[in-house]
Each structure stands twice: as C-alpha cells, then as structure tokens.
Length: 312
Image 1 (cartoon, rainbow, N blue to C red):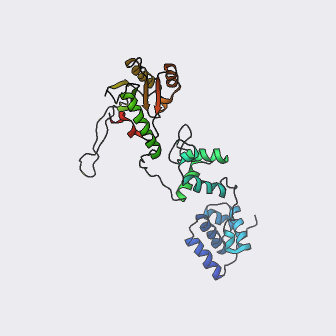
Image 2 (image 1 turned 120 degrees about the vertical axis):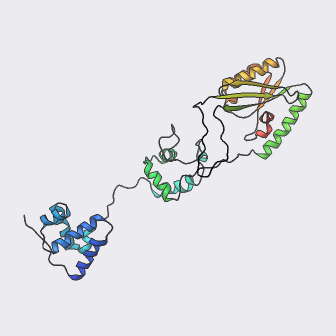
Image 3 (image 1 turned 45 degrees about the vertical axis):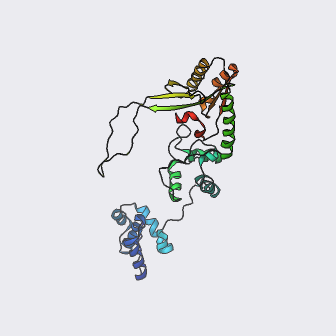
C-alpha cells in the first residue's frame, strides 16, 4: 500500500487546524482535524486510523480533501436530502388557517388542535388527520410536535367558555312562551318544560383546608354508575313529573313522553325541551307524529334560562 502523509504545516494552517481540533463543537470535525495534525507529524494512514479509531480509507479521503481545499475540505458538503413534504403553502395554512382558529370552524367536533395517536378513533391526532384530508400529506407525530414548538405553542389546560344564545332569538322565544302560557291557563293546552339531570356515584371534589404542600385524598370506590332523572314541569298547576334511567338515551326520552301522555290522556300537549340528540331521535319523532296531539318545541341553542325545569 502506498502510504501518503502531509508535509509540515505552515504556522497559520497549523493554528487554524489546531483550533478546530481543540474547540469545534462537532466531534467528527475534531476527529478530521486530528487526522491532519497527525499526518503533518509524519504518522502514516494506518497509524492515524488506529489512533482516531477509523479506517485508513477515511483517513486518506480527508487528507486528499485537505490538500485540495485546505481546512474547508474537512467540512461536509451540503446534503440536499429528500424534498420536504410540507411546502411553504402548507406551513402557511397550518399557521394562519389552523393554529389561529378553532377546529370546529373546519368541521371537526373538537375544540383544540392535537397531535398524538390516531384520529378519528382517538381525536388526539387531529392535525395529522387534517393534513392528510386537506393535502394528502402523511407526516409523523414528532414532525407535527416540532412545528408546534417552533411556533411557540405548548400544552395549556383550557378554561370553560359559557356559550351564549342569540339575544334576538331568545327575545322572540320569550314571546312564544308567553302565548303558550296564556293558552295553558285557559285550558287549551298542557304545557310541559322537560329536561334531564345526571347524578354520578363519584363524589364531587371541592376545595378544603389542608396544609400547604400536601395533597388531601378522598377515598372512593371504583364506581362509575350514574342515575339520570328526566323531569317535566307543568307551570300552570305546578305538577312535576320525573322518570329515572341509567343514561340519557332516546329510549329514556321516549318513555318519559309516554308517561306524560298517560297522565294527560286526552289533552293537547306542548313540550318545551332543549336540542339534545335523544330529543331529536327518529323514535321520538315517530311517536309524536303518531300521537297527533303532542308537539315538541325546541328551545334556542345555549339558552337554559328559558327552561323552567332547569331550576327544579
């Protein structure tokens, strides 16, 4: 094997290479500078390879690069790599149209952009899902997480925001309720305000006095049972009806309406209720159509104050 090594380095080059060997932050560049210094001291490529723990072929390559380009030859050439999947347009969409808005504005039933696991089975990967649906781009969780961090985002516990009803719609509905109350007082109809309440077996935690730094414990059983009470109030007579069930299902809503019908067998009944899915189910609608003398009137969105049953 033909062994090559460098001649004694000029003072300026020796200082530069030695600074690189002593202080560069990249271990590979320090190793390459060490190769050049050893070669200038007369070590052959095999000896240098043993000292710096690499191969003679690698030593020969960087000695050749140094002869051709000086200390710049010890640096890696820019590596183009694979073209990025996420172009500038996609990044702009993520920043302006996604992170600055609520996911509900894009048709998702969730209030925060998240990045983990699999959506829609688990809504913790909403951003990945959105990029796939919108642009056909599949990116890994870590890529999305790094975007969030670079843009100054972090995990923050949100606060509840009480949604408010449209004031004009509420005002119009108050007038409708007043008219229905007049009819109920005159005996033309029976007016019922209907709503559900859920009572869980797990106790509600509230603040308590305790020593600073301690964490008080409240012992409970692993009991996830709950009771749902469906209630209805007649504002004219003050009569309150209720029915107990395990969940607020469409079957429970239907059973309660049948209970109301049994109590007022021949009356024209108007039931005021919210827009819960169980209240708008097909079995409830079919029952009301067959009954012919029972009518359901939905309250405006986010307006529990209109429902007298809420107070009870």
